[in-house]
Length: 332
Image (cartoon, rainbow, N blue to C red; front, side, top):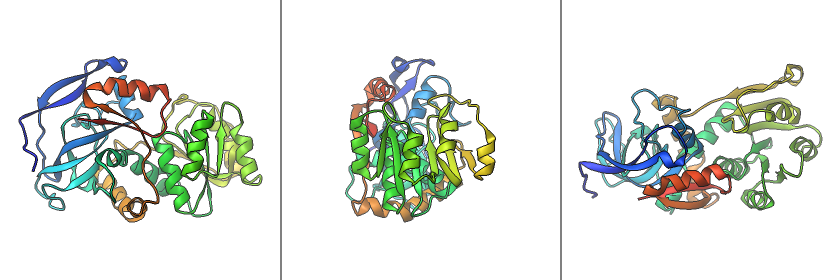
C-alpha cells in the first residue's frame, strides 16, 4: 500500500500564457470527500483542454482545483464514504475535472474504471478523456449505428485514434482527415477505410466518393470555423454533426437550406462541466461496450510520447505543435 504524505508535487499555472507558465510546486495532498477515492497517480494524460486552460480560456468548474489534468491512472490509496465499490490497492484509471498533473488526485468513484486487460499505467491514463468524449458524442449524442459512416477530423489525435478504433470495431465505416501521409497511414492501420490528407485533397469530394455520393452519417469535428459549411456538404440525409472543439475558430457562416432539406442535426458538447452522475453513466457504457474490446486486444490507445511530470511544459509544446500521433502522457 502506498503511504500518503502530507504534501505532493504538482503542476500549477502561474499565470495565463504559453507552456512556460506551467511550473512544478508543492501543495497539500487532497482528501477524498463522500463518493470519492484518492488515487496515487502513476500516469496522467495530456489533452487540448489543458492547453486552453493554461491560456486562460477554459476555467475549471466551480469548486474544482486549478491544477490541470483531466485523466489519470494509478492506485486507490484512500476511500471516502459511499465509495466502497473501490478498495485500497485497486488499480484504476479515472476521468477527473482537474488535478491530474499531480502525484495524488481525488476522483468521483463512479468516474473510475478498472484498468482493462494487461494495459500499462501509461496506456490506461490515455483512455478516460478520449473514450468518454467519443462515446458520449459519437454514440450517445449522434447515435452512430453499425453500417453507418463516420467522418473524423483530426484522425491522428488522441480523440481521432480512439474514435477510429471504437467505431470500426463496432461495425461502422470510418473516413478521416489528417495533415500528413504518415498520419493517414497510422489511421488506416487503426481501421479507417478512407483517409484524406487535407493538405492535398478535398475531404468533401472524398467523403462523397467514399459513400457513393450519399454522404456521411456522422461527423465528429474538432476544427470548427469554415469546416462546418464543408461538413454540411459532406453529410447524408438525416446526418448528425457533433462539434467538440474549435481549433479553426468558434464562429462560422453557413447556409441553413441544406440543413433543412437534408434534415441534419447540428449539436455539440463539452465533457468537463457535465454532472458526476452523467459521467458515471458514460463510464458504465464504456465498461459494457468498449472495455471488452480493450481487454481482448481488439483496440489499444496509441501513445506518442511520455514526459516527466516536471516537464509538463514540454508536453504542451508537443501538443500544440500537432506533430504527435495519438496521446501524450506525463509520468512521475
